Length: 394
Image 1 (cartoon, rainbow, N blue to C red):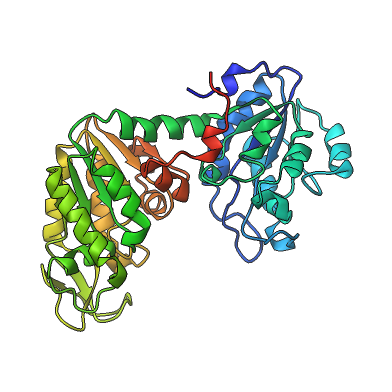
Image 2: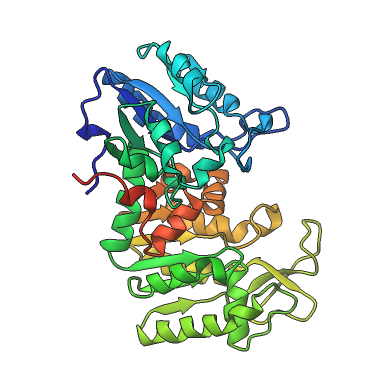
């Protein structure tokens, strides 16, 4: 068990919280999706309520180690200020004498400070010790609440823990708890739903899950690589030529472990990936010149029936090109099925799957939606996350 923010006396202390404010901005630099900012509020409010001065830090985008004005954290500071109902001081940088001077004026009871984009310095992604030490000078206690960045050994995530007492915020704690429980102590039957575009992105997850789950449902473009290796025609659908052997190995290993892998039995097919393209339902084989863009009605029925008896479900990767309305039904129906499960733990992996469930307005009917795409994938692969491993044990 790792220490959390509850394990520290925060009264009168500067608490340096690593948050994930890597949020999308429009052309006028307004935040278009504030879910990550909202997710950090319980930890920030707890620190303020317990007498701490709160200093936040985050990255935004890929500025490649130099200041880029369009990647300033100012829009995130403005949105946080609205959500908190308190002024948020946007610092001019993340380290240095000027930042120290800005933080010296911080009134902990009425204000919060946000350091400027960590990735404006190349030292952040290099996990540079001296940069981490300078960051640590901005606080007395370090709290990591950025699960979405915890799979990266960066200065504000890993090296900084060598210079300050370090624990988890509520969001990080929740991620470890739900993803950890799903993987270590799942209620059975345990079903994994995997989708998205590439087998290569999910192969580590599949290999780790085979020893834990009862069934794996595979949709999305990654299904075509598995169908191809079984000799089923996939028409012009995308598949990974260099991953056919790997897909065969996975199918053989699942058979050995008596884990059932269910693949699509029909598909929504078009001749080009365009919302206006004529659609036909085909399956299990896809005719030449046609490509699969979503799972078909028979597959939806098969997958839904399988999920109805599950007690733990982990879903990572959409079932089709859900961003295009005519090809979103498969993902929508899976989300609906999960939202209706009674007494089951439904854990949604981050990234596209989270966006998809939130877009359908079903997020509040899931047990847990991960805020970290890459981090949740690595966690599901069974890899230790540097940002979690570096925190102090209880």
